[in-house]
Length: 305
Image (cartoon, helix red, strand yellow):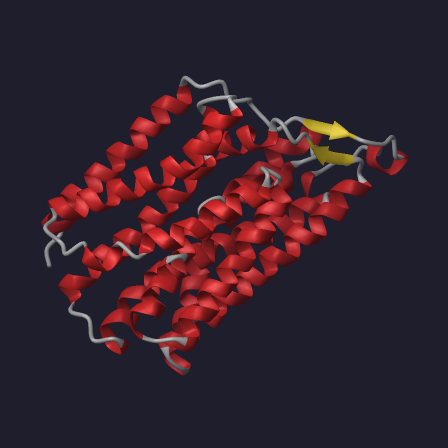
């Protein structure tokens, strides 16, 4: 399989992202989340000389590290698993890898619907339309590449889980992080405990549940940093190195056991993210910080794109 065979599908996917980015550019997104100070706790007013003095940032840096790690490692090890354990031919694996990355697009388009309208009725409709429109883009590019689309139609049912999780989060970043992390754990455990196409769909769906984690972690980690926000943001960006290190770690575990079993590394990553979602809520509350329910989701959209 040559690079030329996948060039056109990826160019189309890239164009789709650019079109959405243009729409978001001209939408009325806030520059940052609207934070509400609920109390005048003296401890929350103490001046802190550096960003690293904030526990939400320290834990958030680890969160970004493991999030990028599980996102990259899941996709990186999927081709080897399908080829060695399931007997797939190399040329037949590409559509499934593209589905994984398309899943990230599906989730991000779902989380972006409130950027386009303030009307609740229309938002409810778009919350179903947007993910399936993104899924349609995936089907289109693979149809152009002349891949068999039959195995992918069932994935439309898995997307319903994403939609339900997005609605249940109600735009709260801590709740969204917790829900999607738990779903990520369930997806990986399902993949590890099954074989065949069920395991492939389970591992691929991790892309759906990783799709909105970056803005959730980032928002929670920099909340309350004040003048140290820029410094804290820089530390968070540095943590994307987790993509390389976690991938290496999963590969090392795969060498000791099997690729199938190595996905336990991703389970541990998601478990930490669920812990962070629970822990940071108390940390921010002790500092008198909460998120405005009406505006936080729109701020998350600006971080996604």
